Image (cartoon, rainbow, N blue to C red; front, side):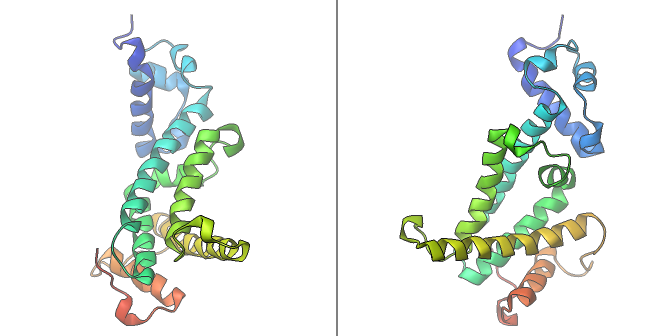
Amino acid sequence: MSKYHHGDVRNVLLREAETILRKEGPGGLSLRRLARLTGVSEAAPYRHFDGKDGILAAVAIAALKRFGDRLEETAKLALPHEERIMALGAAYVEFAIEHPQHFRLIFGRERPPLDQYPDLRDAADSVFDILQRSVTNLDQRGDMTLADAANAYNRALAAWSRAHGIATLVIDGMISPPLDQPLQQFVFGLLAEDLGIPASLQNPKK
């Protein structure tokens, strides 16, 4: 008999999957291994997930929720527009450094297909929506013309690309923030230079 109540099995499997992901990355996950490590039958995981992609999708959704919460908290800060964009970029890079394997999962090749997991697509869209809302000065989408909406999308995509590029280079060891410089200041400097923001605004405060 399993040492877990039936209603807890899904959460137990997810917690173990999170542990494996942090230590080994997505390649270390399999439902058979999860069953062995959690003490459930080999059939039990399949009652909750439709294979490896199913549990990867669930882990990715949870990671995207945490990522979105981090960005949303930053987006709500009372900062001037340019500073808010830079603060979001710093939060983006900080999340990647703190959770490199989760970051690789939600943006990498191991992520399950979005068209097969609508909840995963919704979670990914929510993260981009936070960025899109934050880089436009228009608070109400109903006030946007088609041109406004296209411009907001393009600006969000550009901001996302900048932050994502920095985050990926850092966690892959291609660039290293100076040891004598706070991470936020390092990211602010890169984003400010790229965005053409004056040096006086390159160190926004939370």
